[in-house]
Image (tube, rainbow, N blue to C red):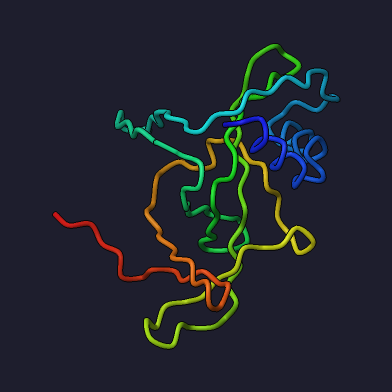
Length: 163
């Protein structure tokens, strides 16, 4: 990821340090952040080990569309805008993702009969934008197509995987 792309993301994240601190508190590290060292990446690959000895390999890239299970909502959709590692107070590095959330506009595309979404604007952000990478515990394919005429995103309900 270029320095310019990284600067745009951190500039858009008005509360970058605050969100990161809140995240560390959520995972059990309650003190102030000592280090500011981050390294940004274009992709991440990791393995989730299930309880029944089954492993799943996850591949995430910048601009991937992902489904995230939110506590208060069934499924929420986001686009990955950044992947980074941050050095914690314990000296270890932890991976995080930065997302832009899709917001359902409660409209259906006239021809395709698929739901329409928009990317939440910074002033409309109700949810955090930085999460531990482990929030994505399985890759559920979701596809969006940008409609430049309406400036909205069409959720492609007809996507399928050929066998």
